[in-house]
View 1 (cartoon, rainbow, N blue to C red):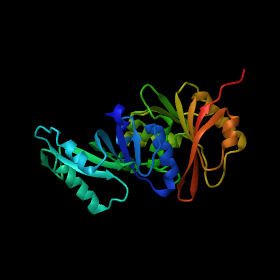
View 2: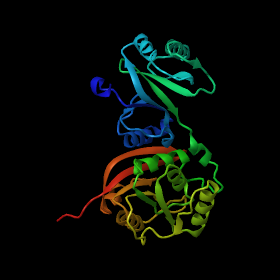
View 3: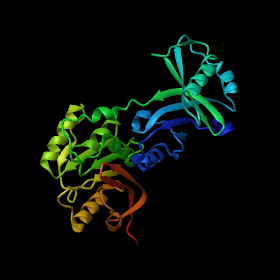
View 4: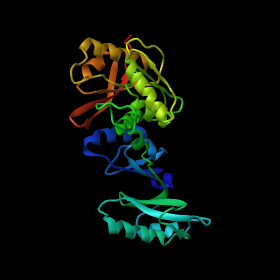
Length: 317
């Protein structure tokens, strides 16, 4: 079907707050390999919908038609072998609540099986996109990062769990065989999200109290203790990707020399980095030996954070 009709293997629906629109775009484009548009992403990549804090549902496309009636006719061939089912309308332009329910009934009545609105064995989704009706098995996001927000140790200015999860996905979209590092891990907000998604990540911080807090948080969620005291400017080792939320507070800021030294330390550790800063930092990033390949801004209260996706530049000659 895909080769003949140029259809996606998967449709992902998503939603985000206006403060995180740019972060959502960057994360979904990196994670799913396709640009999001008007609440959906058409992708060839199979990604657990719970990976992203923005994805709502994933539909594995098995049927497609030019009209709803034609789609309903196609699904008559489904064989459920005694399993119960439910059909949900996941996305489409200009469809209100009543319209969505009517679409679900139209297709559901053509499936040979017993409908169960509460605990179905099989969940199917429908999407209307680009004049086509797409149908397939539907998986929902379990929103596990909401649970992670209830950490024993917290900083008021720490990244939100949503943002931490998105940044981890931007840094490591495909975790298999990848070793990552957060060399300024603080209380471990990024570490918790990364490890919960199966990303192999080590954490370091120069502050012993922060390291203690990170260990407490990791233990609380049953995650391994992969944190140690260390200064990013002195760390050694080889990693595939790094995430660094540049340290700051309300009373003082890093000097330009300290800022550059930290970024040079990150460059030594990994060829790919996501760098987060509360102020413009482009010049220092380039001086440290990185090339900025993509970027966005994300907001949290009065903070505007710069999120830079960077690749290490190689010495000339």
